[in-house]
Image (cartoon, rainbow, N blue to C red; front, top):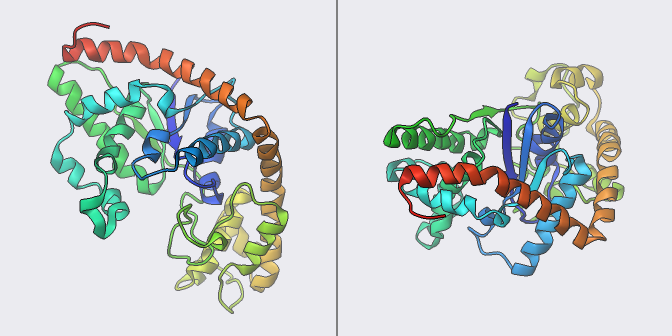
Length: 332
């Protein structure tokens, strides 16, 4: 069976974009692949994190994944720092990757912004850690959004160079899985910007722990324009906020945008927002309710993550033993 690895950072609350772009697809993949799902707390600390908040966010994200339908019995679910093989393999890959490759990584430039000289070294090299996350398990596939394709290409370059340098076919060239209608969900306040945990306004996103009232309030306040829904998808030119709401509706209801437009053509956005709210509440309210139940037992969440960490370490151990032998390390 093919093996999937995917991870998500425990920074702030998971939101609708995370659900439609990633988590929901993870749930749907777990019957057809061997799945390893990781709360990537090592990636999180490339930017400073309050330790208590990091612990709380890690537990909340684990609860979110389980509430969304990730089965920790069927899959491997753990937080990244539980398996030190990630960090060791990342260092080996730091010595395989070329500086020119890293300089081409656009996300570092975006995240570091004008303060590049003050960015952490970890932020600069975190794509090699991402490669280690994947290749420590010899994952064959990674579900990715458009913004992560460059990092997966780097992972393939590292695997290919390692195999070439040591003359052994050790690592697979991992393939991307790009799934779903809404791989990029945009901000409710700005249809040209991706929905983000880091956006200052909570009105810009639907959090997965929002209750029905919060969801309704945010959708009512979501930016649109005075025109009704068009009668075709070509009618969204210059209307990014309108198109974003239709995209969300299509994704949450498993329809295409064309189907949604045909169903609601000519409707005022006040009317469409009510229909969208109903769809979102029906899907997300059971998730937030289950999250709250799970979060009442943090020790239970820790136990699930610890068990997943043991499974992950058992899977990566033979890979790392092979790598250490090939590289020339003595011992262990």
